[in-house]
Amino acid sequence: MIAVLHNIRSLHNVGSMFRTSDAVGIDKIYLCGYTGAPKDEYGASLPQIFKTALGAEHTVAWEKKASVTALLDRLHKEGYKIYAVELDKRSVPLHKIKMSAKELGKVALVVGNEVDGLSSAVLKRADVILEIPMYGKKESLNVSVAFGVAAYALRLSSLR
Image (cartoon, rainbow, N blue to C red; front, side):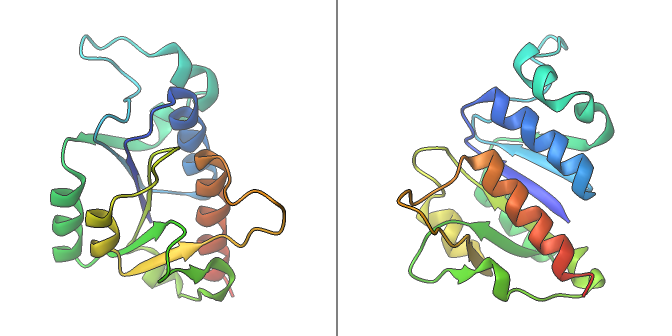
């Protein structure tokens, strides 16, 4: 499984998703749009990511990409299934997903901006749109929490 983080504005969220990616066994993270990278253009570590990643920025491979749609198109051609996390009329409750370990190896888990979520251009490219059921008054989770819930649910679904 790989991860695609698109237009994540909080560097703390990015760091948290690096740490979760290490824990759940994600092979690579693609940082798209204006999502911050662990190192700036001069090679210096960003303290906000360092603080929450706790070293996972060194254990999980990552790459910066400007265009999320070009990346998703390329991943499709490489045989990846795109799993976007978003509340949408086409979304499938996360607990209904079942897959093999082999299938999990070709999953790209995509999360988006903390306020705006994922664009229609991204959702159009998704093979599956995942919904995390909400039982309280709020309609969403923090993006790094939603990422963790979805990543672990997909990993666990492949173990059954």
